[in-house]
Image (cartoon, rainbow, N blue to C red):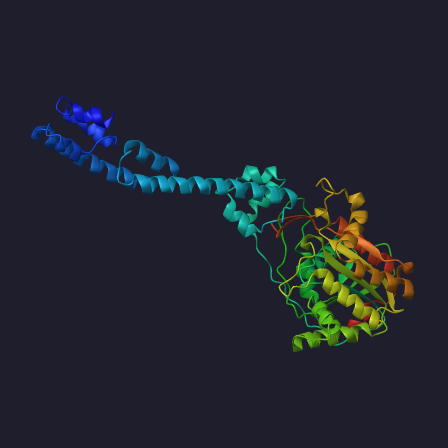
Length: 451
């Protein structure tokens, strides 16, 4: 009812009717009193009803605060359109609406990111989103298997125990070097290679400081068709790990002896600093660099694998240096110091996480197209300087028949950066490379260790 009409009919309206108009915010008690038409009986009745309303309003407001959602505050507004908490209720509803819209946008971004890359978020982040921002069904709609979701709470990151770095490598056997910047995936690739070699019945680990590390690595991967393998944490930056082992098919008599050297990713910072004319960053870097140089200068046959992480998109690190910058500096050092000479039998560039490669339409690249896409990626993402330098070295030294080989690599499917459904196909390719390129002999590296 309009205010003027209420004022004109104050005497004829009941206390209850006038109370409802006050409750609706159409009139105030003070305005009614000023008409002179509100008798004491009506006024006392209205005051009594207002006191009851105030008590109910406070109870309803407390209920809204306890509920904390839009519906609770909307119920308060519906019951108390002229209540003293109206402005606050509307403000909270407006905030909740913005929050809901932001959550919707966030959800769509998370799901879109996961469709493009199942490692866009780590397991802790996904656990915090699950049931609040996104559902299990929505995760599965992004191609995430239920086994990966079920294992979110079971992630256990094993800390690998590295062995002592030797002062020298035994002579007479093939050295296999795994190079890669920190986080390039070389440690996981090594574990995958060992697991597959063991499964094939080819592998025999030598006793010594690297035995525990090698055993831990290969036991990470189960290859059981479920996303239940957990990738290891980063290895200490200063360590160069030496793993001696043999490879032999059950039907063969000849044994291939391998001295595998997994280089610390920090070595690339050494190459960059030296190329830039700067001193090495610490005594640890000096020791690591000197150890590597002593290995490279010996007369053993050598095979080199350079690991590049596809998923890093060549982004700068905290020093403002990209993966390709480190590799380019390293290749310049190799060329200037003639690191790869006639003792080098092969050089391979390994692009890890190749399963994440996408075509121009955003579709997964078929495995039979991986090599072509890997080459294009390396040429189009500022790795050309590194690649061309290695190509020149291969031609000049007659390595790989004068050609540089690119090997795509995948662990299988990795979810949330830590949970893996291992597929050994790529690792099997690396094993076969070693079987082909490492010469067999009737004596093995074990004869050296048993002396």
